[in-house]
Amino acid sequence: MGQLQDQKAVQQAQPGLVRTPLQGILELGQMLKPKSLDVRQEELGAMVDKEMATTSAAIEDAVQRIEDMMNQARHASSGVKLEVNERILHSCTDLMKAIRLLVTTSTSLQKEIVESGRGAATQQEFYAKNSRWTEGLISASKAVGWGATQLVESADKVVLHTGKYEELIVCSHEIAASTAQLVAASKVKADKRSPHLSRLQECSRTVNEMAANVVASTKSGQEQIEDRDTMDFSGLSLIKLKKQEMETQVRVLELEKTLEAERVRLGELRRQHYVLAGAVGTPSEEEPSQPTAAPRGGTSKKPPLAQKPSVAPRQDHQLNRKDGVYPTQLVNY
Image (cartoon, rainbow, N blue to C red):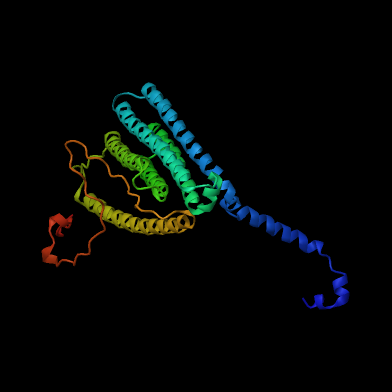
């Protein structure tokens, strides 16, 4: 900086040496800028139609892929595995069909909103004027299309025994939440007496039911397929039993610590998601609810997983076998 104050040094300066790094910084900034910021308001209307069409195409592709997986499963598996695969794939097909009807109804409601609210303005001008609502529709539509693709991928892995059943359950929850987001974004400007809105809400309830069926069929299939290790300790000596007991206690503590850390991480992820979604989302009238597994005949509904209650520690004389604690005995080896 001192040299810049010298007139002779300024005359010998080489601006080209500075221009190149600045150009590189500008290019990096253009790459890091969110793509949604490149969309001008007059292009929002075209983007809505494009995203809704892309979502419909993704769902149609998902239905076809599930049909192909069904045919492959009939040739590659038999017995219990075939029964489980067919039940899971049938539930996924029903879910995709329900989502397809919901997207179609949402598109009809969207057109009704535009026609009733644009007045003398064009469709593009209406979308540009209501850019926040339009961006919410685009975001929700993308989420539905992405969820349908991920659900099919997870189902394919489960049928091929290369994936986890839990992934399919999580995808069912996510796709139910994304369709709820689409419904919330669609009904913001809708007339409450609109028949399209009534049909859309009915479609939303159907999607939740079908997503719950996917969860239920996945859990029941997992119980049928996975081998359950029988707990036979009859051949163990007292020393080996005590050793395995201590190892199990250590494992329980490790799993509890890991579970608590993952819960904290999940909370941070959801909070960051709400922050990012709030930048382009629309005000939601309903909280998206996760589907719950439909009860199976002959079985009782499992209670939801709850946090460990804080219970005051018992005295030694209050411990019993229900707590998994047994009195220590002195044994001569």
